Length: 494
Image 1 (cartoon, one colour):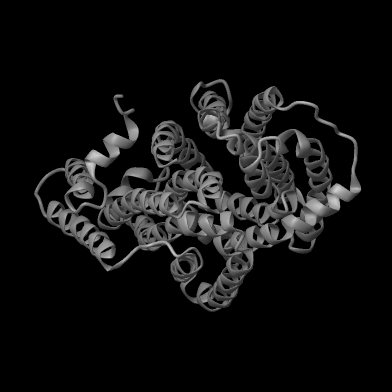
Image 2 (cartoon, one colour):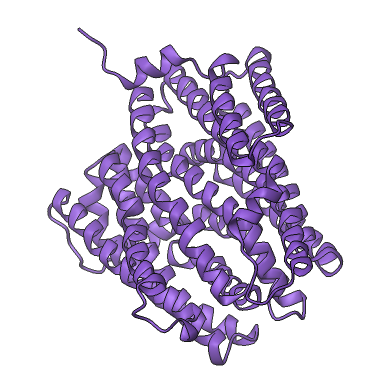
């Protein structure tokens, strides 16, 4: 199982590193440059608002289904029809809720209402795609799932490249609706592709409505639903609060979104671990030795990746922000530099949050696979309380920087609590000697990046040098061993 994890995570990372960074750093960034901070901030607030209620589309069904199919592939045919019916009903319920709540929150007219409509439709389509993928993941068809994980983005990139750079569309009329519609087309095509894969492996599916089955699935899924809801609130609510608490037409939400962009890019990669690890943890829970090896291997990989990204982004924050965002038309140098300074103040705080969040994709997923939902929900509830209380205090005074500080505090607390819970409940071994290797690795990455930053060379060259040396530090500090990686990836000769 450990061998399979390494092989498939490499393939998954390869595909996603080809596609998703270009979407976030190329397409999404260009869209914000065209729209401006205020308009894009409004779009981002509405996107996150629609995401807060995403759990109503799922109620934990995706996680439940992934575990069920992983434990017994026959559950695919047994559950698929009934779960599909539930998803359709939940889609209607979700649409009603977001429009009713949105109406009372002020999202009830003009462009905001249109944005909410398209955001809601895309969330519904995405929920169906993830449900279909949960069946594919449960069957351990990781290559097909890896392709599906980027398929929608590839299509959306093609569409948006035509919109932005073909010259066929009048850029003076460009708005966020076009951006959302491109994603809608890509989601529909991906949904059809995923459905074809699932139906190929399912036999004897019945779509007859079974309300008893509906009730039983919801009963079993409610703990998952509550967990997803709570995590969505403490992870996604900052742009919404910035837009609602500050009377600035979404400008601070736009500033936060610019700094958040690399967080989002990294989080998309880290989240792939959780998607792949959930069925693998579920399948190895009874084997303590194999589980311990899988936990250590997965944590080491994600720690190395997230640690290097966090440290290098902190040291090169000014240069990265300058590279990503150009001056607006007619903008004075002083105004441009001041704007970059605001982004650079928020950016390192969010990258610290990214590091902490990445670790939860191992320990939180392990607890989820074990069914320890009560403990996870208590941790998530604490995160929600801390997040809202802190943001109500710091956002009016410190604005986007305050929201980023809150995010860092919440992610640190929840990550630490999830690790403690996982260690106590699953009793895996991560002793003092192991943590010495972790501390040595992180200290080496900080020292290397600091020393390279002092060199009198172009920052991009320095960044490349630091990155290469830091990757070598993974093996030098024995966080991972090269021979072990080779043995895991390459088949052994008989």
